[in-house]
Image: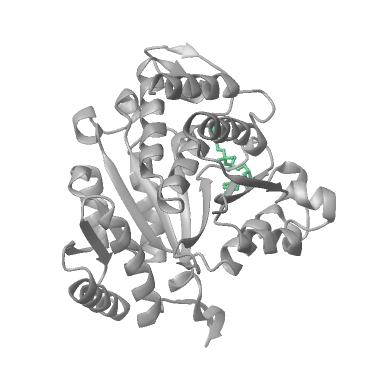
Length: 368
Ligand code: NAD
């Protein structure tokens, strides 16, 4: 059988630096676990613009469509700020998301014990937290028509339209239920059915899919404003939160920050199942290209390593290896190993980007 295939698009700024540490882990899995990937690499963002005059070539797009998963670093930087909108680095990322039709955005909020004091909430509220937010990514109010700024009588009016079809709701709901099966079997569906018709439809469709196809999953419904409150009050009540594009945008940032540094946050964007049954998928850290620290060995590679761990779990059926990597990270953090962004008042052992990768590989070795 062919090896699983992975396209690495490291991008700009700290992208290549953090990706170098992921490559160490990929190498380790091949050497020590016999898990070999067919890895290809290509350019995206400013790096692709410099080489080809576009932020993503058709050839790279075709490669992304053909592999089992894409792993992306970050794009952008001050050098490209004055470029035309059509060739800005971010357009490469948007093209990937659009053409792969990645409609389910997964944002975990997981609190490593050693970093619980980084949260603005009390330790006992966040320690051990493990939530997954599934945000619908390609529809809703950011895309609905009509939209624009129009003139009505003597004044202007700004209009955006919240619009969801049953099938758009159904496919992201299925992504959330499938995820819940691999986690705690619990989904909280979030909308504003009290004041929005799109919310009423959302609730009906999600409930119907659960009743027909996922009876083993516990489903509850919550209004978005209440969910925001609950997230900062008792976040551990949640397992999978399923929500639309707008509410998901806000709630996922809120939940992510429960856990501390931007350098720790992974994400995945999933689309429809491919012929092999795996979803189309792109994995990437939440952070950007961090031009302020690029090239200095200061970037924290953990967000990108955790994104790769998500790929192992959701694209490659290697949940045990994903758990092994997460445990290695937990161990390294518990030992006080810290990149600059994780340095707290209690100090720690300062390491570079590469040093953090080496420590994680050593912890993986120790796990055998
Ligand atoms: P950013 O996420 O790049 O950086 C914000 C702050 O967090 C910076 O101080 C940075 O040093 C720090 N930081 C980020 N990642 C870190 C890491 N792994 N380790 C340690 N510190 C880290 O956001 P920004 O500064 O607003 O944007 C910089 C560039 O990145 C812009 O061109 C922006 O358009 C782009 N961007 C890209 C993506 C993406 O590729 N998905 C996302 C956001 C921003």
